Length: 578
Image 1: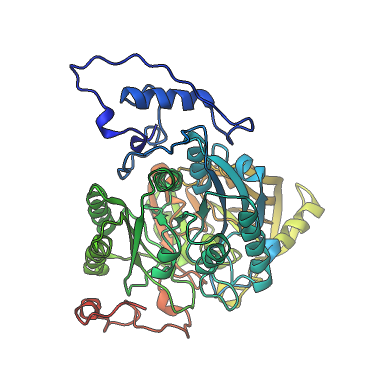
Image 2: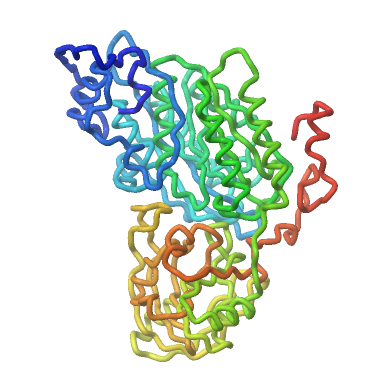
């Protein structure tokens, strides 16, 4: 059971005899969504005895080990645990690349009611953590609506409004005591610069100010103080790759439990930092040091969360860039703001250490061919996980031209998949592969290809990044073009592990070069399994050099696009970031 469900003074001294107790639980007939009542009974007994018992908590099972901030003990309601609070769970989740093609309603996977629970069962995702811990804490969970789309362009207003009104309407009609949201932080809608602010404002308008709203966030969100003011608490993911999504969901649910039962009032301070950089791993020394600072701050008694958010650079909106989030119990001081600024200053001081090394496709291939070991080449600039189309041809064309024996996952081209399916396995076809979405991403590859296989790309993620999540890439065609075995998909998702290769009938251990489209998340699975990773950054919509993208709406200077940014001077002048 979570530490904060144990009252500190209930733990007996070693010399004290443990009391004999009897426990009666009065439970509602309809029960609690995904809750094991024997676990609940075990938790109550454990509380009374002042120990954790033998049941492993989600924190105990966490891989890798991640520090969990301390939360204060819960003061139960007079009604007792039998009267369970009704907690809504839902969200609209999208990372928007405003330089890509627009996103419509058909691009969203929409889950309603029990679909939210069933799709997240066993998944190490934000939703998985929210749902499992909500049940473990004994809440009466009310699944509402959850909509998510693969990162892509600006969301059509009518699509977003339809989803927002359904979610808000369900929340208002469900007699909720509290609400848990899984949102991203970088959602952009036509005429709405922040999906998340607009959604939370609409929920506040319908639910009122007394209903607690706690949300998880992606660390690539572009957020400002208004979102912190609309929510009771925010819990951004800590790591990139995001292998701690589940833990953040657990953390958010535990915080909500304290708010509901202890009536704790949290303050969320968001400090914006004028930095705009591409997706980078938190294994960089600068971020290892920053995470250590955040961990130390989270050990303070009143601090529930201290996180660095990297921001998402592939949008053209006024509110953009890195930020720091600190959530602390409101105690009449300005501790949350002071601590957020302390972390922000440390981030700013390390700005010159935040870099991504990359090569042109030809250079990356040459290095890989000379190495002789298993090398992974990642095409950073056409990452569907950052909203790029996924049909760029720069790297694949270079592999074919070099005659490199390699495998590639995957290029998005439903037309070519349909052509291969019509021809059948074993056929030879003339393809115009990829290059259909944007001239920046390269022209179509005109080639003769052998159809090696046709398979459905449905599988569960085994990478630490999203373990257990279901991925559906639609029909896959495996083509051989020269020395390259290419996976062609009819669905858009970035490559996280060898799942797409396996479904396409490709054994990556038989290839000296494994090529894929991703910027960072693939590293969680591939890095321990290859000799080296070489990054290539040809022209694309999610480039390493974020200054290459045309921006019209920036309202302040941002490093490193501008070199004359003086962050410290802004605070010395008493100015708040926009």
